[in-house]
Length: 171
Image 1 (spheres, rainbow, N blue to C red):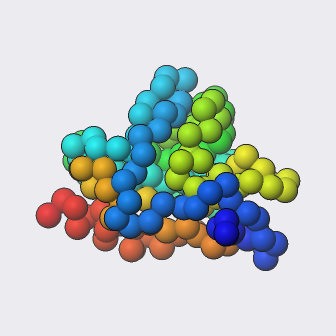
Image 2: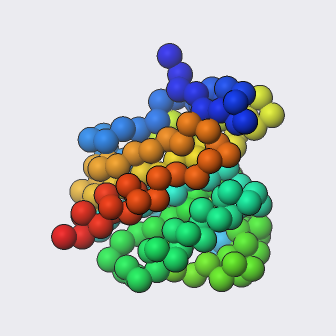
């Protein structure tokens, strides 16, 4: 049975099942705000946090990316932090410039739809093809150590739990 999330109480089915703790994080190809391909997931040799949002053009997503940017900027090159949405790179660049987001990467899955490998693509309804809200923390060997699929898209994730999972990998 496929996983679901809700938007203001209305259920939305996801394409596939979201990845869980202990599973290997697949490497996916995204496009950054400079319209260049980047790869995330897999074994990068350092911890990663993938912050998956529906659209940076919404208040909840914009706030989430800003909060993670503030919390993670100090970690610099110790980690790879990427906010992933389906927004076009031009919109992502505008968002980053407007909100002064520079401490984390922002990338889009509009080109390859690779995030279906993480089980977070909405499969039906008006939001079909958009990403659900989720957070994945991945260790340096490519294993998922924290996974949160936010059940209600209009709500923010558990920042404290995600950040604690990421910091645990830096000890």
